[in-house]
Image (cartoon, rainbow, N blue to C red):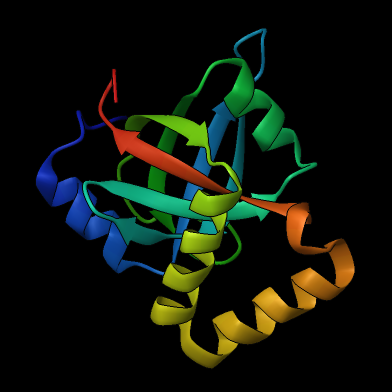
Length: 134
């Protein structure tokens, strides 16, 4: 079941720690992944490895759904449709700041570990605008 993407949905989803970000393969099959979530103005922000399958699927169509979940991906709410886009280097760096702000020391340590493992360009920010057309 999905919800159309209201301001209340945005508030509820951004307040949580994780969302299940579901992207779609070319054949329409859904692939869900739990990711950290934070608020980016009138959208949601997530952060992921540049080489991940979800980045490829987002670049292909941008169609996603997001739902509240725990760290293991167990859904706790209704899925909301949205349109996702992969950010450039400047946008991704801004998202790193939003991660540090929301997740504190844990966010800082996670970002540092990622930078050591993958380098600064190994991750990207993904902006999700709720609603069928974003």
